[in-house]
Length: 164
Image 1 (spheres, helix red, strand yellow):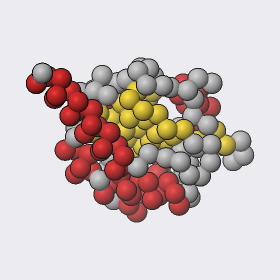
Image 2 (spheres, rainbow, N blue to C red):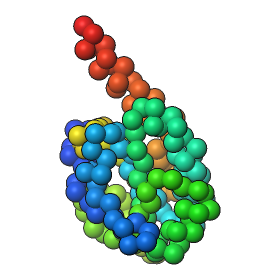
Image 3 (cartoon, rainbow, N blue to C red):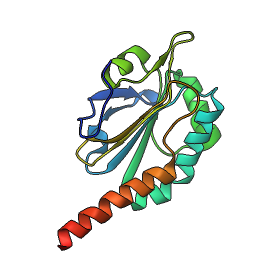
């Protein structure tokens, strides 16, 4: 298992979305900052809070040019219910292979039942990792305020370099 670090290219991963659609990362986020969230499942109160927080922050995330994608091992019906429950407007993948994602990204996996622990990545517009946050338990995850602040800081530094 290899953890993804700053500057690493995010691996090409395809996730199932509801209604038979798919999304391929990081290509689907090209040209934007990306926030990729692996969440434990719809049963996890911390994950529900994180997903709701990212939904509430959609306007601020859009202002800094960021898009969000979330994924879990939950089946399609469970994911569809979660999306409806929280009015999630960003893509939410389902039926992820926890072991395959762990191998590709270093995400921690719970043994029994099998699910991904909370893992978050912020990607630059080229699909490289800006920051990765790995959790081996229920807490320790990306929050929207930190993501907006980080991206804003990166953009401010770039603007200052361009102006110099």
